[in-house]
Length: 521
Image (cartoon, rainbow, N blue to C red):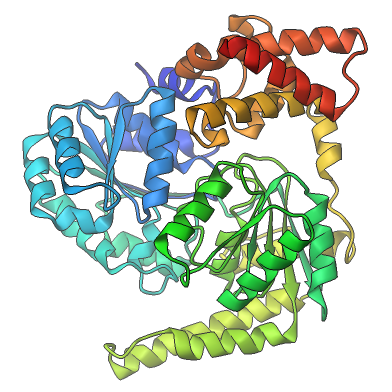
């Protein structure tokens, strides 16, 4: 099967996004690649399609357990045999996964970077053909990056030890020029094809608000998106607890996540957020790098982060499905004091040479300075961010608080966007039945269908399987699993609309629940 056929059959798309096809073609030709693509631009497809087409196994090195689990869930739902091997599995489960992999039961295997040095995994790769090694979050290899992971430095030796040497593909959404150079060097990419599609996320609205008393403004922002998923980042555990309690007292379904909680409580909070049992995640930066949740409508920074890289990566967790989303920073001068204190206390660099330690301290101070510049500039916020990452940008983006006036709402409010891209009540009904199916299957809702697919469904109102195939994100497996129930709901909704019996959100949700209950029986 060719690449377009795979894209259609497994992922439900009829065309590639910017940069995807070039990266896929180079990987399929056996050339190493480095892809720098913004969050939500479809990095995963760039290695998943070659993995499906190739005859061997693809190893994906990923830094976080939650990211592996989400990716494998999504692949299995799409009909792609994939597995992960990490510390969440028992020894027996790991060995069983390796046994099945040795029998070519999987096309894609996700592992943590620490796993590649283990004897059992080294024995495994000697038995099977490895066609591709994909490195996700490749910026973790750079000590100049904020997410440095020492075990990433072992990847180059791991790849060179495989015979014949597989193609090596590295991907990241966050890389300054310095970090990009480190990735190329430290992963030992050979004559790589390098593609950067840019850092711009046009669907994101950026705003900075200067507030002495943040809570009133903060609550209004959250209430605007009531019932939708969002993340609130705080710089300290104390603030996480305070903000989470504040939201709950005001009727907002919120959970908390920080390093001071037990693994059990953190995992429960993450599950509640992933499965849409809680609308808002309040967290320190301990939460998020591996989160694959696509339907996040807002990210609020209650405190200023310590660098632009952190801010853009965290803000970028909004709108991954292409929907309009808000990224709002609540700034106060106290945030700068907190950031300086955390930098002075939080980095254990005793093992470093004095010169190296001084360099890193200077780097941190420089990064904090740029973060303060962003927080206080009157110029276009998007232009500031893109310039920081080395891109030229038009001065007026028209979609940030500096460009459209301080404190104004973005050009597209959630309600406006819903109406402009499909019937709002139909979309609400589709979300309801999607969420019911997800709850029944014990899967995150976005694994069934992303909101962007439901928007397209609401626009097209497919009433046959052939029409259902044309919906963005509907591949063969999802059509087979969910086509019948969604088509049935759409027919009922269409009749209700024509007869004037669909006039409220409650009616839309009731229809969806009735169809789900009838279909289930």
